[in-house]
Image 1 (cartoon, rainbow, N blue to C red):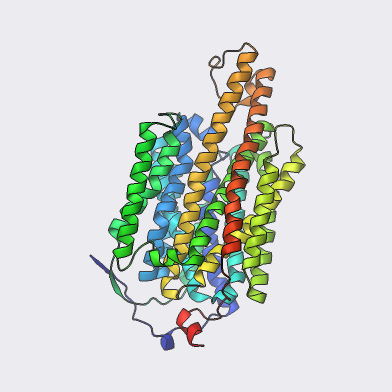
Image 2: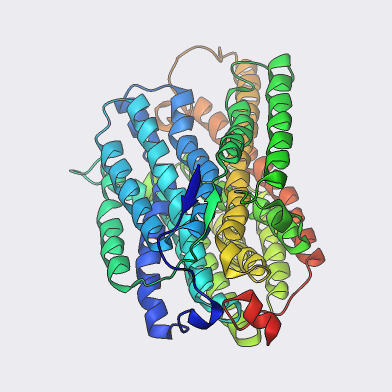
Length: 520
């Protein structure tokens, strides 16, 4: 089956003139509003989940999947949206993504049970993949790489603020009388609708017309290869042992699906994951670095909030306020690097500095426990935020600079795909390590006190309802385990530094089209 665009083919001479700063900012306003609501929806439920699970009578597995479902759908759909953005009108695609997101958000807020909520989170995740891929593709299509650092900085800041402010906003909504957890979904709708209107008014973008066979087989294989590791992390250690025939079967199937995916993508004329681009040194190293950034971005926002609540005894709102340094650090890193990259055209140094800051912050966080002063942890996460800000969009910028505008959607989506996959699998793995260490620590210490670990019922996360001696054990266990998972994350972040050191810096071109730069 062939897919074609509606607009006439454009030659370089017919391509529209470069947009002015004002015109770009008008488009960015709509894009960033949509992107903010999409990213926000992935983290806003974190502090509301205990209330949601209690009200809808859910299980621990369903607790995990309320978060995982949207991340997985976003990961799987991102390269599909990215490829479509190279084939059909980007404006139509981003508007479709916004409409799907609004529908998913409204229905998620109206859910009567956990299966319905998880299904709507999948719908939200699909839309989030579209918004992420198409926003990056549109920026890559209307702004030359040399100028893109400035505007990518705005995009990176928006993504970072949405990621780290989600738990704070979610906590405030849950703690506000008259609102409740359903408004964590409804609150995203108005801004999404505003972005739809703004983009309809200001976005004007041409599309090169061509007929292609869409890569349906590749889409299925991407879904399988990305889903299996996440499913394994979810069920391993609970439904079956980490080392077991079931685990071996999961990984064997993952390897087979991945090999089949590579084979299909190498042979398909329009692959969803362009292997030729992935094999290019800059892209390959950017992917490695982006995986580490994904783990840090989602891991820091998810687990540091839990640390403040469980180990520190803070409310959801207070925990959100304590994570503000993460947001401020990210804003500083992304805006500073974006402005300097635009001025000087050099980007590698910021990947190195950002990776160093990320490793430093995560390494310092590995030292925390339940007795660590809160201002120490707040200082440490500021370094993590600075690293995130300098890395999040600049890895994408490095890749976009190596491809023509006709491939910018697939190339950008490829980096975003691996970043999201790294974040989804990474958070699941870190969460599994945290749960395992807490369980072992609490069990052994309760047994030493002569308390039956299986007795009493209830959740260990409800620390305030526990007897004082048991509550102290639980706080200690969560504090120590949080340090352990950040140590693991710091080790993974070293990969970003290695990638940044090895990546070859190509001067940012001053044209949108690669051919124009080559002929200059």
